[in-house]
Length: 380
Image (cartoon, rainbow, N blue to C red; front, side, top):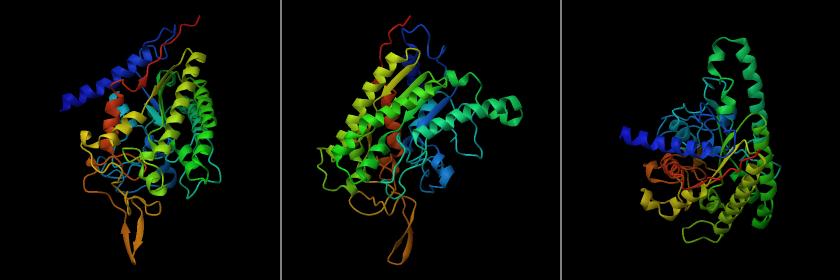
C-alpha cells in the first residue's frame, strides 16, 4: 500500500514538472523545477487554518477523520492543497495568520475561509465571508517577504523557520478562490443574471492580483477554477425552487460557475502571452468535482448532495445550525455533529468536501487530464 501511495504522489510531481518545465521560453520559471516551497492564496477550499487563527472559527467534528482535532481546515481531514504539498515531500502549509507553532521554511498559506477576490461589501449576509480578500492576501505576502528579509538579517532561531531567499522565485504559487464572490451575489438579493454580469470584473481583479504577485518574483502558477456551486447543499437548501439538472444540481447556478471558468481560462491565456517568463497552469477542478455527483457509486459515495456534518432538511443543512455549532432543540442543547462514515460522503458541511472526496479530486487532476497545458511562444 505504501508503494502504491508513493507512486500516486509521484504522479502529480511528474505532472507539474512536465507542465511547468516544458516550455519554449528561453528562461524557465524554475530552472530545475524542484519546488522547494508552496505559497497558496484562496478561500476555505485551501485554508489550512488561517480563518481559525484569526477568529477561532472551527471546532470538532472538523478534522476528526485524519487529524483527530480541528486544525482550521473546512473538512473532516485533509484538503487538496495538503495532497499537493505531500506530493512534493513538503510539510503541510502553515497559515500565515497563525502565530503559534508555524514553520514557514517551505512556504506559507495566505488563504482564509470565506475569502473573496473582490473586497466584500455590505450586502454580504450573516458574516459568511472573510475580511481577508485576495488583495489583502497579496499585501500580506508582500509584507511577509519584507519581514523575512529582516529576520534573516537578524539571525537566531526564527531565521531557521523561514524560506531561503531564492525560494520565492523557485516556489509553486497555487490559487483556489472565486466561489465566494459568486455566493455573495446569490445571497445578495440580485438575479442570477446580475451575478453573472459581475464575473468579468471579478476576473479582472483576479488577474491584477496574480500580476502583482508575479511582480514580487513569482513565476510558476497553479490556478484552480471554480467548482460546481449548484451541487452544494448551501445552494440547494437556500434556493429550493431552482431548476435541477439530471444529477440533482441547481443548473443555473452551475452555469454561472462555468461562465466564471470560461472567462478565467481566457484571461489566463492572455496573461501567458503578456508574461512569457511565467508558467501559468489553469486547472479544471470543476469537472472532477462534478463527476462525484454524476456517478457517486463509482467512487464509493452515497447521498452526494447531503451534508455529512449538519442538521435538518433534505440536504442536512441549515445556515443557522452549521457543523460543530451548539443549537437548542426543544430546550436542550445539541452540538451539530457528523455522519457515521464521512468516507462515504462527498460533502462535509454543506459547502466543502470530505477528505475522501478531496483525495479523489486530487487523484484526477494528478493525471493531467484536467490541466490546460499551453504551448509557450519563444520571445526574443
